[in-house]
Length: 357
Ligand SMILES: Cc1ncc(COP(=O)(O)O)c(C=O)c1O
Ligand SMILES: C[C@H](O)[C@H](N)C(=O)O
Image 1 (cartoon, rainbow, N blue to C red):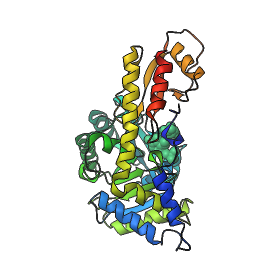
Image 2: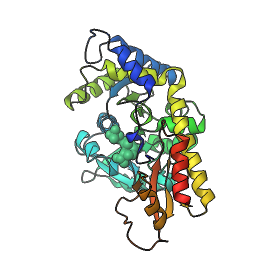
Image 3: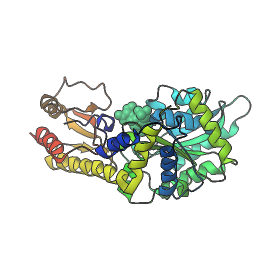
Image 4: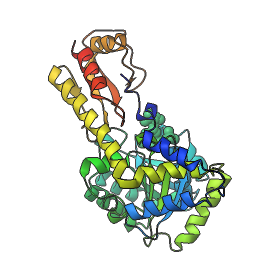
């Protein structure tokens, strides 16, 4: 019963097979191989973005931090949600790779930034003179860190506010696939058509061993897109994130996007989250303070239930982590349960049985 994180899940056999097939003799290193070119074209095709600049890195943190470093200056601030991964879980990488940009934290339920919150923050930074950080970029996470998704129109409204201040829009798409699978909208509608300028598309949480795409879309934001892409390549290399045998990462991304596999895998994870939520709700003792819109759920459960689950061998995080299993049985404690493409109905049903007793 593994529900700690989709990072704990196995790689999908299709992607492992793609890596094996890529292991065919010699090929030019550092991304100059044909598999990488094919994967870059596959991304452009799936996103209906023939001119997009596409590069691959191994981690979501590298993707986010290098992308933000490419679109904002050290003396600026990036507007993000208070619970954004770039704020809470990247150990200062965005600040490091931007050369010191700050993060301006904005509230909103379910880690979804509100228009009002962003508008207020933009107004507050309007006073910026030489003594103040300048507005740098907007960063949104899709799906959010609390298991919710943004509708394309929500993204468009927030992006419009950013665009009104000539700010680029970054999207942390570590679980973009889960949001796309949930909403059934096209990747283009969920990204550049809604105003996203640079998308970090995560495959690692959704079947890859390690593969993340940084996609700069050909809007009016970056002027010379080729130059922006080259700048990213230099930042990636300088940051130590250019893989010499990039073909093995590219092969994962290419296979993941081929024939809609990425959406099938994400759909499986979402369906298991739905099953798990339904089973806990049926037990009558779970409280849900956040919606289940992707592959994660955040139920509040009685402490006694948590004890029972831990005794049954269930693996998951209390959320926040530091909540103790010692104390009154009926105190409600929130946890995070994350399903991945390999989560089985048996895993889910065993968790529900242990929870409901
Ligand atoms: C929303 C979000 N963004 C970015 C990341 C960073 O990914 P990585 O841990 O591969 O650096 C994670 C990690 O799971 C995440 O949950
Ligand atoms: C939170 C942790 O850093 C990881 N991003 C995860 O979602 O498991």
